[in-house]
Amino acid sequence: MAFESFSDFLAMGTHGHYVWSVYGISLFLLVGITVQSITAKKSQIKRLRKLSLGKQNTHAPD
Amino acid sequence: MNWIWFHKLGSPKWFFHWADRWSKLIFIFGVSLFLLGIIWGLVFAPEDYQQGNSFRIIYIHVPSAMLAQSCYLALGISGIVSLVWQMKMAPIFIKSVAPIGAVMAIIALLSGAIWGKPTWGTWWVWDARLTSVLVLFILYMGVIAIQNSFDDTRLSDKAAVVISVVGLINLPIIKYSVDWWNTLHQPATFSIIEKPSMPAEMWVPLLFCVVGLYLFTVGVTCWRMQTELLIREKRSNWIKAEVLDSGV
Figure 1 (cartoon, each protein chain N blue to C red):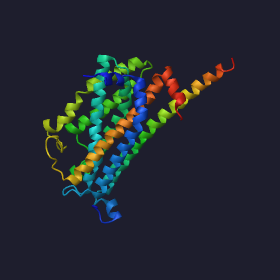
Figure 2: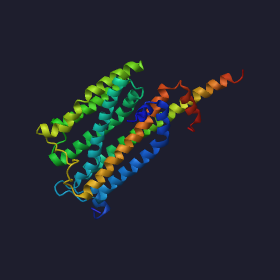
Figure 3: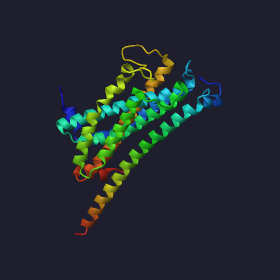
Figure 4: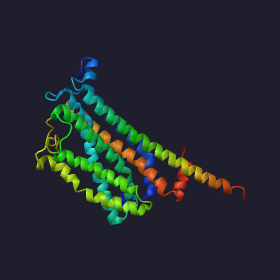
């Protein structure tokens, strides 16, 4: 362990705001691109599913 | 040499199934490695004798900078592949990886600027390394913008491929900028042929972060490529079957 206490860890010597802002921005961006990639795929699957199910239903009666 | 893997890679259906099977695993493994490296680096790695704790920014800065360059290398190579073999998957890969590369480049730039303040006393200088990485970011934005700017997919793919290949020239400039010019940025800390000058308790977690972020990128790229395939191949029977099978 490189730090003596939790507040010591948060302070990072005098460099706390540098270190934590880097980690904060990076976390935000990496989580952002992950979530965007997953939701884009899911919504496209949903869209196509609706489309193909809709087509099947219109053909079903005859 | 057996070229079957190359043909398989060019098959949208084969890739889609491969990604279904492996992408989640690769992603989870990558994120775990990355987080392990981050926690190790933040909490357990010793303080740097010159920089104090601000050196801990390295665990974000170096991996993201490596990925920013590697993603572009992959993007440029698939541009060449697209020009030579007209492989269908190549522009799909370019479209999928470009936003991730752009995110990596912006993380590298921002983390570098924030690290620069306590270390060099300035957020930004127009030296060769910093400027060439900024150019890398702009190239990514160019590829993204142009690939989304035409209604005709073939045309937008062609344009994106051309920028991707031309932009490759920037990569050696980034790599050697620290040796060719007098830069504020230090030369590379690591080399394949030498033992690291850093103590192991500092560079081992960095290695975890680097490998973890590579795997993260592979996983997310797979999902983006699948999305692009779902858009482009929506009329094909295998996509229709895929969509009806999936439990979303």
